[in-house]
Structure formats: structure tokens, C-alpha cells
Length: 223
Image (cartoon, rainbow, N blue to C red):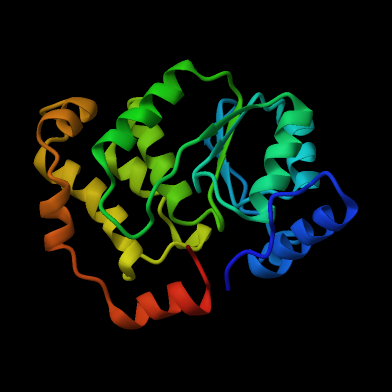
């Protein structure tokens, strides 16, 4: 179902609609009681599912957050509007950094995330909708930016966060495995991304399991 929110947070009716849209259309009702907040680089970068305003306030107080990275990109949803408002009220720097969860990671977006990572104020938290796939991709990329290995990056794409590598989202695992196989130990990650990474070939060669994709897309309702 498409969003019912029209962008208005200035009126009581608009704010009510934003919450209904967030809770029941964007499934934030589950996120009221479930959080998969976890450190990527302890004390510096964290990941989670889309936080409600109250949870964002608690995380900011507890972790001393200074930056919020939205891996969903700007959307016409109540969840998006409410979290932007909360981030502004908390004084957090806000970055839209949209990634795909079922496509080969795009070179320009990887490089843009690196630019954000090197310039942002920390501690920072990154979120997508469920904190499973796009958050896992971004976390894995940051692990590599910080000098970690592909094996370290792959741990960010884990069933512990709700990631299903047999589904179409497994193309994210395939990306890190591709780097591990083709260049790790021989060429720095960012140089490989700039010079050698072939999005089209990765997409062409990846095959997902249909049942796993159905469970991921329609039962778990991951984006």
C-alpha cells in the first residue's frame, strides 16, 4: 500500500496521519518493540532499523549521536518525516544516502558513502527500514573503509539482523565475495571499486532462490 501521508506535520490531523502511515503502512508498529541496534565501529558508527522519534532520542542520549544517515533516501512517508523532524530537534547532522537492497551496489553511491564517512561528525547511526540489508551493506562498506576485511564486512550481512543471503538480497553478499575473490590483498578496496568493479557483470551472474525471495519480500516485508 502506498503512503497516506501528505507531508503535513504542522497540524494535528497531519501529524496523526503521519503516525498512522508510519505505524501501519511502514510497519513501524513492530519497531516500537524491536530494535536491531548494533555497533559497526564501536563508539563511532552504529546501525539499526528505522528508529521512531522516541528511540532516536534515547539513542542520542545514550550514545552521544551527532549524525544520522538515512539509507532509505527521502520518501513520502510518515516514518521519514517524523525522523527528519526528530533529528532536527536533536541537532543531528542528517544525510540521505539511498542504497538498493536487491541490486548490485552502485559505484557512485559507494564513493558517496565514503565521502560522508570521512567528513561526518561521530558518533553516527545508519538506518534503513528493517536494518537488515541496506544497513548491512553500508556497515560492510564502512568496515572496509576502516581497513577491515571482506570477511569482516560479510558479518554485517547476517541472519542476526534479518538478512537472507539466499534471497535477492544475497547480491549484497556476492558483492563482498567478488571483491574478496578478485582483489583483496592485492588492491585497496576503493581503488578496486573505482577501477575494476563491474556492476553489470555482478548483476548478470547472481542467482537468487525464489522461495527465499518470497519470504524476504512478502512475508518479512523487507524493502
